[in-house]
Length: 497
Image (cartoon, rainbow, N blue to C red; front, top):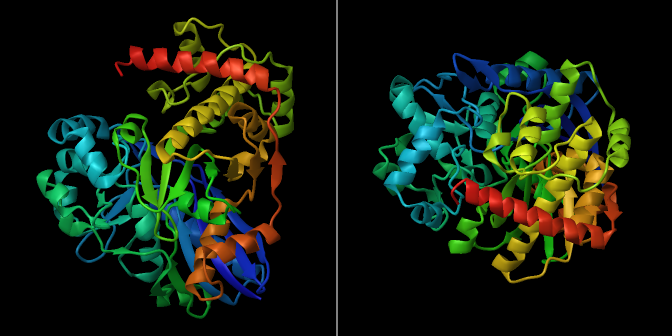
């Protein structure tokens, strides 16, 4: 059976999956998983990119030890917007900054003052947000100009890691569209925009389409592991593009949700939807594995629960998923809500305290028990997805009939059921490892083993389990949605929107 390596790296952990394909079905085996968190140092948040690369090589070693020797190719997908800078001799100049670093805030304000928000959106199709590459690059230029002066090449995270394996410098399409430096009309870097902002356009490595074979793995890595040449493929580099590729979607009237630290919810469109409403509602247009676009919204996801777990762990409280589910069932429903996308939840020192403070300031009874906090978070998230769903229908002019959810978050049954309840739409949850599967699927297409995404999705459906959820308790959820929308509107007014 032919096999490929799929490196799927998220903002909280990374993994190496071996994907096998026998001509009819996919097989997936996780051979290595490791934690991945930004490192706080000298007042900044960095990615420990060399440790990440070493962990990837550790995964290769485990894979070989497990008998996976004849590997056809490898590909890497990651989160968006972050990047590394290389010198003229191809050396890494510094650890990449994390999108959670706050140094971009001033650059965001300055660029928004220099270029109208609607003009930037019309050029890039991407919602202006401080985490985007454009603001990171501007912040480095101001705060660390020597780094920019030495930089000869900018590679986005999956492409930086592909370079470590192959020695080839190229930025892949889906990840490039997340930067606010990609012109959706020209389908290339917006050099005019970068010139206007005095950003170094010459360092942006050329863009290649998903499925481009970069070349063989470096001789040094072949020798290190005693393996034959493995093709390094620039598959869909953005993890959400990978997740969408793997979802067994059969109709145009379907929404997707990639569920993890962030939730990305949207629909696939042939061309970007750029207008006053999509801008005002915070939507973005990013690339798909087949060269189209994802009209989506970045929404706070299970980060809220992850951060609460960290607080509880410090108190010696550790819960299994089953225990958390029982705590939620015991808590009173619809007691309090939060706006999950309020900036105060982006990176607080204590998430539990932040949620409590938000509820008190908005005149609600604050959560008390762990179950109260978990229910408050899941109900608020699910109701926000209903809000996003209605906006997607307005922007596309189509009613969404079904929601496909993929990613690690769907292991939480209540999360999936609450989403079906809040949106009043059936939910198809699965596969869990959607990003890894989409990653490997893009490789099988590049290798010529599968014709296209349509055929690939049919194979995915026959290879992995999905679970169906039907809406329940509609009267209670409809009433809760009205209260939630009022809360969100009031919160936006307080923030000056």
